[in-house]
Length: 622
Image 1 (tube, rainbow, N blue to C red):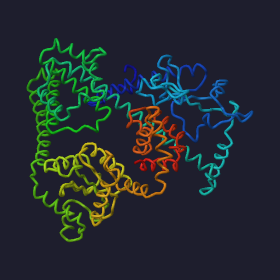
Image 2 (tube, rainbow, N blue to C red):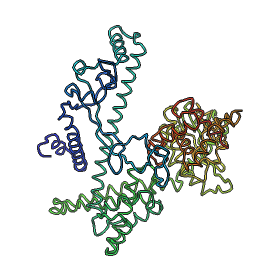
Image 3 (cartoon, helix red, strand yellow):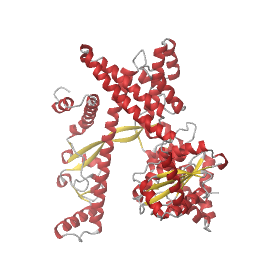
Image 4 (cartoon, helix red, strand yellow):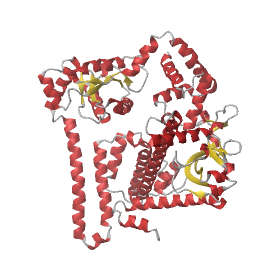
């Protein structure tokens, strides 16, 4: 950082526990600046100006905004090369596809993305196999004109007219903006929002990358480099694996093991066995800790939200942290020179660990042992009264205040019921209740859940239904994944506690809907309404014959996944990235499959009316 006064100042003012993270951020930023400088140099050599800030859409003039003076034709990159001094270049990183062997750029439209993860699949005629390309981050240019007259270009007719109208609006006031000007303004605002979102994503990615580097460096050079594991390691490993027995077998669970243990052997299992051959029992325990840490680290980066940690593992993790911190403190020169100071620091560390551990253990103990049993009785009484449809009495009003349920707020009922009611033992219902409390987390007060007969009923507050419905859907689906032995129904949102009984009946109807016996996710009453509409329609068979049958036939003939892709696309809210993540493929794969669906059915998944028909057709399938 020598010579970089700003970087030195940031390091000097960094807190002790932030120093390594901030240093890594500065190193990453410096590396990116060096990459940018190298990418910019060829443009500088040609005479272009390199922009330090991203172009402002609507004020700066880009290639797409221009036509040539001579014949009004499109302005291309080649046009800028005739006089680079009239142009500026903005460079940003973008993902492009290149040939795995030659490194040449490949058009994503030329790739049969349905062959991804299927090495033996034959690509569609005129396309190439997905395994022959790879994604790569490259610096891509955007050209901004600095001198319209000198470059021999003018604004496109539409843009010129729109800017004239915009200027007139600015001088004459509101109400004079025509359609062209309004379109230009909205486009500029949309692009500006996208620019800010991209910048935010890039910044968050940088922060995550720096934190990951520092964290893994600590694991590799400090925690896992030891000959003896910290005290409590064996218990921590046992508790973690007992609570999550599939942790070590998850996809990518062992990918980080070579990095953390310092070997390069491609065969990870063989390399670990080699290490164990010469390891002492203590070192073998450290290697085992490395396997668990690598799996947790892989999950932390990709799917941290999925993991649930039992109280035993949580408490031992706190204690393991305490011992690790003390080991680092003990080696500090100040502690070596002043043992009494070490005792003071050790006491504070252990008191913090004990305080946290005690609080966590007590909370779990209270939940498990039913210390507040009287409160549970009152909870069941209130729940029964609300479901039966009599929440207006003075007692109910008082009890609802006790549980912080506003009388006039908006609520949804979530109902969990075993698929085989005869197996709903008290123990199984208790586990379902625990899972509900773990997964359903409303942002508003007024949450009430309890056991009623052989089902678990939850009154879920949705005071701002529009903004919170998506959160509830995600939580309910995660709960359904956690409880495959149960079927889950979710009502619409209703206003007031007096409507809870109606919401409860809707949740029951959602469970008994036509798809409730096959779908693995939660079942929403609003979705079930569509099933009833489709079932009662005389066009149900037409939808099936025109949409579903062609996709099923194509999938059989080509070993494809078009129908599954359409289902995932609808389930992901018509979001390409969400669909790709659900199917574990690239977004271009999804885009390619949707294009094929359009060709086979005549219905374009990117056109709203066509998309409605496609979604309804899925519900017409037998």
